[in-house]
Image 1 (cartoon, rainbow, N blue to C red):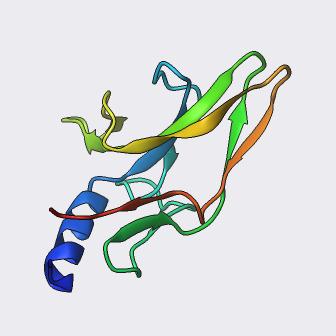
Image 2 (image 1 turned 180 degrees about the vertical axis):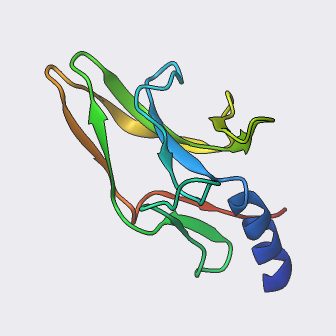
Length: 127
Protein backbone atom coordinates (compact mmCIF):
# COMPACT_ATOMS: atom_id res chain seq x y z
CA UNK A 1 0.00 0.00 0.00
CA UNK A 2 1.20 3.49 -0.83
CA UNK A 3 1.52 5.97 2.00
CA UNK A 4 -0.51 9.16 1.86
CA UNK A 5 2.53 11.44 1.55
CA UNK A 6 3.70 9.64 -1.61
CA UNK A 7 0.20 9.62 -3.08
CA UNK A 8 -0.29 13.33 -2.42
CA UNK A 9 3.20 14.11 -3.72
CA UNK A 10 2.20 12.55 -7.05
CA UNK A 11 -1.11 14.44 -6.96
CA UNK A 12 0.61 17.77 -6.29
CA UNK A 13 3.20 17.21 -9.01
CA UNK A 14 0.49 16.57 -11.60
CA UNK A 15 -1.64 19.44 -10.29
CA UNK A 16 1.22 21.90 -10.79
CA UNK A 17 0.91 21.27 -14.55
CA UNK A 18 -2.89 21.72 -14.64
CA UNK A 19 -3.06 25.37 -15.66
CA UNK A 20 -6.18 25.34 -17.79
CA UNK A 21 -9.12 23.24 -18.90
CA UNK A 22 -10.68 22.91 -22.35
CA UNK A 23 -13.53 20.96 -23.96
CA UNK A 24 -12.85 18.56 -26.84
CA UNK A 25 -14.87 16.73 -29.50
CA UNK A 26 -14.81 12.96 -30.12
CA UNK A 27 -11.58 13.34 -32.13
CA UNK A 28 -9.85 15.13 -29.25
CA UNK A 29 -9.88 18.50 -31.01
CA UNK A 30 -10.33 21.59 -28.84
CA UNK A 31 -13.82 23.05 -29.26
CA UNK A 32 -13.79 25.77 -26.60
CA UNK A 33 -11.59 28.50 -25.29
CA UNK A 34 -9.14 27.42 -22.60
CA UNK A 35 -10.35 28.37 -19.12
CA UNK A 36 -7.36 29.13 -16.85
CA UNK A 37 -7.27 27.16 -13.58
CA UNK A 38 -4.04 28.54 -12.12
CA UNK A 39 -2.41 31.93 -11.94
CA UNK A 40 -0.44 33.18 -14.91
CA UNK A 41 1.78 36.28 -14.93
CA UNK A 42 -1.21 38.45 -15.82
CA UNK A 43 -4.24 36.45 -14.66
CA UNK A 44 -5.81 35.16 -11.46
CA UNK A 45 -8.25 32.33 -12.22
CA UNK A 46 -11.91 32.13 -11.30
CA UNK A 47 -11.90 28.34 -11.58
CA UNK A 48 -9.40 26.22 -9.67
CA UNK A 49 -8.54 22.60 -8.86
CA UNK A 50 -9.25 21.33 -5.34
CA UNK A 51 -6.59 19.06 -3.82
CA UNK A 52 -8.00 18.62 -0.29
CA UNK A 53 -8.86 14.93 -0.85
CA UNK A 54 -5.92 12.53 -0.65
CA UNK A 55 -4.85 11.43 -4.14
CA UNK A 56 -7.48 13.47 -6.00
CA UNK A 57 -7.44 16.57 -8.20
CA UNK A 58 -11.01 17.81 -8.61
CA UNK A 59 -12.57 20.95 -10.03
CA UNK A 60 -13.57 23.17 -7.12
CA UNK A 61 -16.69 24.48 -8.89
CA UNK A 62 -18.73 24.19 -12.08
CA UNK A 63 -17.09 25.77 -15.16
CA UNK A 64 -19.24 27.31 -17.95
CA UNK A 65 -18.02 27.27 -21.56
CA UNK A 66 -19.51 29.13 -24.53
CA UNK A 67 -20.07 26.73 -27.42
CA UNK A 68 -20.72 27.66 -31.07
CA UNK A 69 -23.55 26.16 -33.15
CA UNK A 70 -22.77 22.79 -34.74
CA UNK A 71 -20.02 21.92 -32.24
CA UNK A 72 -19.78 18.50 -30.61
CA UNK A 73 -18.64 18.33 -26.97
CA UNK A 74 -17.33 14.89 -26.00
CA UNK A 75 -14.88 15.42 -23.14
CA UNK A 76 -12.45 17.66 -21.29
CA UNK A 77 -8.67 17.98 -21.09
CA UNK A 78 -6.30 19.70 -18.70
CA UNK A 79 -3.65 21.89 -20.33
CA UNK A 80 -0.44 23.55 -19.34
CA UNK A 81 1.20 26.70 -20.61
CA UNK A 82 4.39 28.71 -20.51
CA UNK A 83 5.58 32.26 -20.67
CA UNK A 84 7.46 33.03 -23.88
CA UNK A 85 10.64 35.10 -24.13
CA UNK A 86 8.57 38.25 -24.46
CA UNK A 87 6.74 37.55 -21.20
CA UNK A 88 3.49 36.60 -22.93
CA UNK A 89 1.44 33.63 -21.73
CA UNK A 90 0.94 30.82 -24.28
CA UNK A 91 -1.01 27.59 -23.97
CA UNK A 92 0.94 24.45 -24.84
CA UNK A 93 -0.39 22.53 -27.84
CA UNK A 94 -0.82 19.17 -26.10
CA UNK A 95 -2.98 17.92 -23.27
CA UNK A 96 -1.98 16.49 -19.92
CA UNK A 97 -4.95 14.41 -18.76
CA UNK A 98 -8.68 14.40 -19.21
CA UNK A 99 -11.76 12.31 -19.70
CA UNK A 100 -14.25 11.53 -22.44
CA UNK A 101 -17.95 11.70 -21.55
CA UNK A 102 -20.18 8.63 -21.87
CA UNK A 103 -22.33 10.57 -24.34
CA UNK A 104 -21.33 13.50 -26.53
CA UNK A 105 -23.55 16.53 -27.11
CA UNK A 106 -23.83 18.45 -30.40
CA UNK A 107 -25.13 22.02 -30.15
CA UNK A 108 -27.68 22.83 -32.86
CA UNK A 109 -27.40 26.51 -31.90
CA UNK A 110 -24.84 28.45 -29.89
CA UNK A 111 -25.11 27.87 -26.17
CA UNK A 112 -23.37 27.13 -22.91
CA UNK A 113 -21.93 23.87 -21.67
CA UNK A 114 -21.31 23.60 -17.93
CA UNK A 115 -18.60 21.20 -16.83
CA UNK A 116 -19.70 20.12 -13.36
CA UNK A 117 -17.06 20.32 -10.66
CA UNK A 118 -18.05 17.34 -8.52
CA UNK A 119 -17.71 14.59 -11.15
CA UNK A 120 -14.68 16.22 -12.85
CA UNK A 121 -11.56 14.83 -11.22
CA UNK A 122 -8.41 12.81 -11.63
CA UNK A 123 -7.84 10.06 -9.04
CA UNK A 124 -4.15 9.32 -8.50
CA UNK A 125 -3.30 5.69 -7.84
CA UNK A 126 0.23 4.36 -7.94
CA UNK A 127 0.71 0.68 -8.61
